[in-house]
Amino acid sequence: MNYISTRGGLPVNAGTAILKGLADDGGLYVPSSFPILTKEDFEKLIPLDYPERATEILSLFLDDYTKEEIKEFAIKAYDKFDGDPAPVLKIDESMFVLELFHGPTCAFKDLALSILPYLMISARKKAGEKDKTLILVATSGDTGKAAAEGFKDVENTEIVVLYPSEGVSELQKLQMTTSEGENVHFIGIEGNFDQAQSLVKKIFSNKKSVERFKKLGYSLSSANSINWGRLVSQIVYYISAYLDILGCEEIKPNEKINFVVPTGNFGNILSAYYAKKMGVPINRLIVASNSNDVLTQFFNEGLYNSKRKFYKTMSPSMDILVSSNLERLLFEVSGRDASFISKLMGDLNKKGEYSIDYNLLKQNIPEFIAYMSDEDNTAEGIKIFYEMYDYLIDPHTSVATNAYSDYIYEKKDKTSSVIVSTASAYKFASDVYKSLTGNIERNALNALKKLHDYTMTDIPDNLIELDLLPILHDKVVNISEAEEAIFDIFENK
Ligand SMILES: *Cc1c(COP(=O)(O)O)cnc(C)c1O
Image: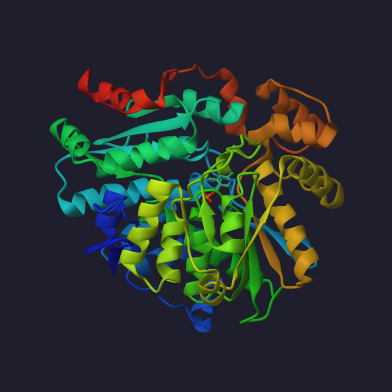
């Protein structure tokens, strides 16, 4: 299968799309078409375990890899999880939770970033790549650590992560600053995720920077969700969740379900949309935003306006005003019109906004509907969900459960709905503890214990261990100095 850039250009194969991350024209790679799964296909997938399902689904897209290869990668990748990588829990008559936080870093990024390194190493080999690979990552909190876990000590590969030094939870920061691996580098920036992401994209499309890395022996790649390898791996858990619910006969064949997804860079929910394109019977895709509700406005009005106040919230992984993956959705909405997309992205760059005909949205993507949850409601949502269902959710997931409540209130829809739970509550222990009890515990490691004592739920092992690890990365620079700081790592080696 070929991959094309949302802004035009020549098609490439899957390995190249994954290795490059971003197309040369600044666009994002998308598959030339979507494979379709039939009712019979779904039936065959039901008895399979997660790595087997992943093998079948990934093979449809990554046809320049052998099925044996993909199987080996999937088994190794998902072996690092604590049990089922993507279990579905029934919460009430029509509400389910898809738990995506059982990986090494307790957030959904692990599902894709555990397998991405294997796909990249193999793509390097297939392409006969002589350069070393330098993975440049911008993180809003969770991608950085998950990518570092996935790529640590991978040969011929270095990884540099830019994170907003004051814009992540204390535990997210600890996870990053204590990361091991000779090839792993973290740079804190005085700035936010959008600035970090925009710098990474700028470096990718700046010939001078690319040349300078090349001289040092490196080709650039990305582990952000701009990389197709991330999105394709995320499609798997949407199909898997559907199979689980269908397999338990909670729904009939062809009966539709909804997914509710806490959204920032639009990568996670876009994978759900792709699952729908492949034949998963999806009724609604509910886009849940925190106070940075740029997407809520977009889906309600057709106006994407990134010139607005930036809020630091208790769901920091969604503190994003420029959602990169929306570009891929717009590509589909516009009937795959690359010049139209180039124009919109040019507007975004120059004016900080773009707009598209609202009727086009309503006609072409009627499944999308968007809601926002502010900080008070998010805190309240954690408490209510715990009291009603005896189930602990993190702030990102609470943004989703609130969006779902708003949706039910507005549309009275009884369709079975899956809340996508993207992180362990313990990763945001201080805020979750405060939301539940009203008590303040600023020290994140103490908050872990207090949250445990209050709820008697298990603290994930890899968070407890943070207490014992030394800080290995403490560099913080102004965003304007970040590019030089990256070169510094390699030029002065
Ligand atoms: C990254 C992240 C999100 C947002 O996912 P996108 O793919 O950026 O929309 C939501 N919740 C958590 C916990 C995350 O780490």
